[in-house]
Amino acid sequence: MKNDHKFDYNLYLIGLSGTGKTTCGRILSEKLNFIFIDLDKEISKNENTSITEIFLKKGEKYFRKIESSLLEKFSKKKNHIISTGGGIIENNSNMRIMKNSGKIIWLTASPKEISKRLSSKYAEKRPLLGDSPNIQTISQMLEKREFLYNQAEFKINTDNNSPTQVVKNLSKLLLRK
Image (tube, rainbow, N blue to C red):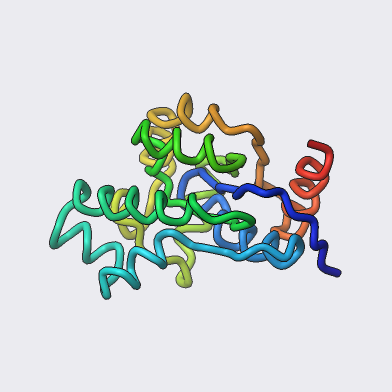
């Protein structure tokens, strides 16, 4: 059953790759009747190539510039759920944009669980994590970014929870605020 509650702002899903941002974002958007945006998909569409190819051919700096530009564009909308790339938080301007135009939700998972999810044959390759992300690499990336992720208003652990349960827990938090 859809909830047509309008917040008059956006919801931004942040966290490492493999924490469930896209999956949970889609479900949450249906539940709240919001528009769902996967920022990485929008970047791929905009550039007419994969994220991996952008990193290989044009570099991370170019990717981050496009990412910031699209974030700014979507931040001007309301009632959108925006699934971001894991590194979007490394740009202070991006954090400011998200804080000023919505609520930031940090989806977390253990490095072991992230490795398992990203090693699935269905998982997309992540340019900064490689073909089969190991627990040590994931732990290092999380450690590097954790203080930035901690700026989120909400934090939800996705370990041992189905995407539906994560969305149910998140909906309760959002509707209380």
